[in-house]
Amino acid sequence: MNILSRLHHRHALSIRIALITVALLLGGCRATLFAGLNATDHQAGITVPPSVVFDAQHQLQLDIYRPQHADHAPIVVFFYGGSWTHGERAWYRFVGTTLAAHGVVTVIPDYRKYPQVKMDGFMQDAAKAVAWVHQHATDIDGAPNDIFVMGHSAGGQIGALLVTDPSWLAPYGLRPTDMAGFIGLAGCYDFMPIPANEKEMLGMFGHDQASQARAQPVRFVSGHEPPMLLLQGEADHEVDPSNAVSLTHALQAKHDDVTLRLYPGVSHNALVFALSRPFHNDAPTLTDVLAFIRSHRPSGDVTTMP
Image 1: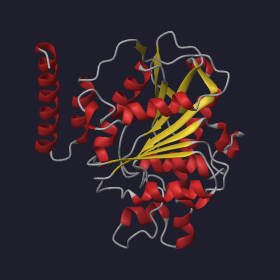
Image 2 (image 1 turned 180 degrees about the vertical axis):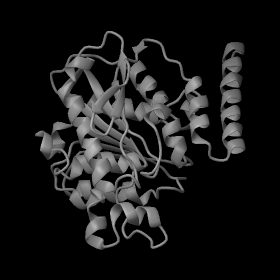
Image 3 (image 1 turned 30 degrees about the horizontal axis):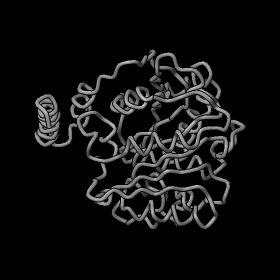
């Protein structure tokens, strides 16, 4: 390792240590942690227009991260996690800037959360966001037939349900197969029965089996899903890896196009933090996501990704 490489390594390590220290000291002050993470993640060659209102009734907005000189680029609609109860689109700026720097138009919408709404509320918000992106794809330099839905944790459940249960996109004249693919990062896909002590989850998904089944992407696999990439850390203590394994088996039984990547030693948050500069080497998340997008673009699309 030469001198420049050692200096770069030491700088990245110091940033990582600082962020981890801040997280420990703040004891759960997520906003400050994400602000610190985003402050280290400047990317060249992208534009970030003002936030767009996609649902005036509920004042829901989305952020768009666009590669400069993009033309019919692939689009990722990213749903962040937060146990369906918290989180903000601005926290995940590092996801948008990183993917845009690699040629992917990235849209990060907000959605209403529990207890303001139950499952129907945040699923309706997510479907409306995807429909907005589909309608405005060319306006944001993307392609309407090249849209990937992506989500982490609770956002993975939201995204997976959009592309397995056709009822959510149907009001907008869309089908799951209108999406180019789904990318799940430690998503919740098969989590029945919900334990009796999980009061918030019971509140948003219901106490009876029929209600809880509506929230399980694995229950809706029919063989009419878009291609899927499921990424999962084996050291995840928040969302059990069995969720990704179960959904993979269900998709394989229907001969769907699915790829499962299990990362040894990778935790729940490390999986998505690996999309940022300081934590890039903690997991091959970015490499696998970009490879999946490149390999599942519409045939005949000649636009390139850096």
